[in-house]
Image (cartoon, rainbow, N blue to C red; front, side, top):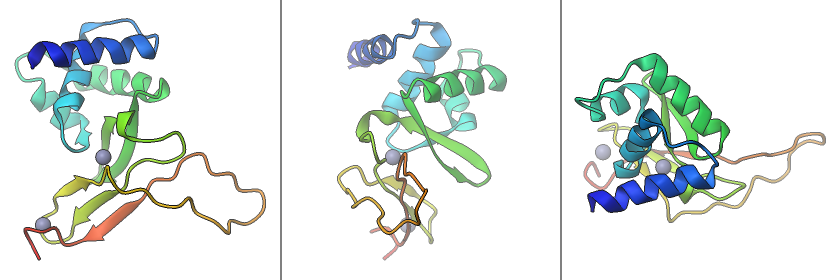
Amino acid sequence: MKTQIKEQVDKLLCSAKMKRTVPRRTILEVLLNAKRPKSADEIITAMSKRSANKVTVYRVLESMVGAGLVHRVFIHKRAEHFELADRCTEAQCHPHFTCVSCGAINCMAEVSMPIAKGLEKGFIIHRQQVHLEGLCPRCV
Ligand SMILES: [Zn+2]
Ligand SMILES: [Zn+2]
């Protein structure tokens, strides 16, 4: 299992033509193991013993967002959240569902939405990101 993740990490970096540096590999490993978007602070916590400073983590995340490996998903509790881009298509990200009762955020990777229509002239959509709010099964 562990080596499988390492292989996946190397494959991702290779596909993005990025060098395999330790911070990149560690952060990708955390995101691969995550089931939902994570903030920089959560990523640092998950990196545990390996020394990580926030500036480095942000810089690495930024470069991976630029390379299209990672998506900036939303701001939750004033913190940007990131996740791997591998479950999104070119034109849209999978929707996210926030429970208004317990605050849990869920990736709705199986849900796809029609792209927004009826935009005024001159607007061009690059990506569609949908955020849903409501109650999760535990809180219904
Ligand atoms: Zn809930
Ligand atoms: Zn997600």
